[in-house]
Amino acid sequence: MSTGRSPAGDIWFCVRRNGAPEREGWTDDASPADLPRRLDARRGDVVEACVADAFRPVALSRFSRVFHERARGLAGLELAFRGEVVRFAPTRMIAANLRFERALERFLEHRGASAGEFSSGGSVRAFSARQFLAPAGGEAGAVELFRGATLIAPAPAADEDRAADLADGIGRWSIANLSAEGALPYKYWPSRGTESPADNAIRRFLASLSLARLGQLRGSAEIRAAARRNLRFNLARYFRNIGGGRGAIVESTGAKLGAAAVAALAILESPARSEFIAELNMLAAGVASLTDRELGFRTFFFPPERDGDNWNFYSGEALLFQAEAARGGLECAPSLERCAAVFERCRARHYRARNPAFVPWHTQACASLFAQTGRREFADFAFEINDWLLPMQQWDGLAPDLRGRFYDPRRPEFGPPHAASTGAYMEGLADALALARAVGDRARAVAYERAIRRGLRSLRQLQFRDWRDAFYVSRKKRVMGALRTEVYDNAVRVDSAAHALMAAIRILQPMTFGARMAPPG
Image (cartoon, rainbow, N blue to C red; front, side, top):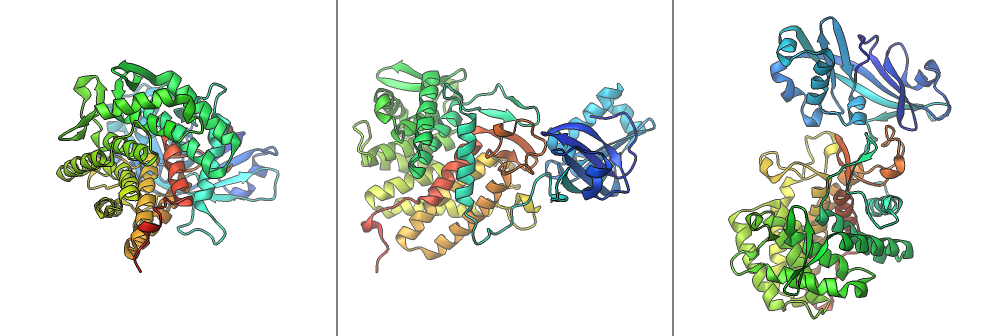
């Protein structure tokens, strides 16, 4: 990462062509807009610039407190050792998806030095930096960035539809990245331009489900065909007959309740459902076989030692599938009485150990059951759990690009902030809003509407929207429309896109409950 020379000047520059760096270094006495001319950049090049200031020393003992994740892309890092000074500009760390700790490790590795040697002979400074992009050969001038991207405003413009824009972008990404066989990339690293070898069947089937819903929303033959091809690929790869009339989604790590339920939902809503009726019936039997008289559901077909893992996620996915199967009148569906009994067991367990992961899937299940029965307990429980979730949405006192995400710093065991989490919570909130409107609960409707507006701001901030957000990406079609994991982590994952897409669709096409569900009077 280092040129091996001490910086000269306080302006970091990097001349990029199609995202790839061609020249980089430090200079001074230039405005960002004038850098393309000063550096003889060619038409089509983009110059990335950071104007550094406010340098301040940092004791090595406080390194992790100053250079934490939220500071990545905002704070610069300067390391001085053995007469050499090396700086890591904020946009440079975003473009490389580089953590502060790893930057220090690489610095020492390249110099054959230990942490102890640096501690006794090195020094660290942090600095701030205004960030700019300056295209060469045009009239645009310099565009100011915040943490390597343009900012989404707190409130949308009068002619802006953030849900529609979010959905359209993810739809384009899905079509552009779908292979001839029907696969979508599970995880992609924009900085490297490579796919991760990691895998997760549930998250892949979420993409199948989201594409089916988008095809229905848009009435698009192209998207319907993509959804069909993707589902066919995923079932061929993961579906297995496990005996006793049951089907499961089998991975190297075992067979999960949640995977069977989401795959079954994807078939249920697929334009090609008739092609996969046998798999649907077997998956339904598999889900039913994991119902439990005490816990609502067990969570793994195998291995047995993992049973109980991820209960908060999988129980909601399974209950939603069963409720929707009943709503669709499928022969394989359990009765509404059985669904209600499972709901009661899940509710009781949630009260014993509350977790936000429980909220979105069970909210959707409650909405489906309320639509079929009109029983107020389903709506009331959805309201209760979403009211409990709302304080975890962050807004005031944060950097502007973080506003609208869901994270409780007082309860880190609930998990880190993540695009997929925000998208999932938004799915539940969209159904909670539809329920609130259906029963005439205006106060809750207002609260949920605000949370959804804020969540859309967060999701659009995470989306690769145009060349400015992807200035460092060489293979732009692999990312445009997809969502970064966080504003300081540009990894793209398929479930981040799928959850955000399904949330947007639920906002654009709210669930309806029929005339008998209308508020009185």
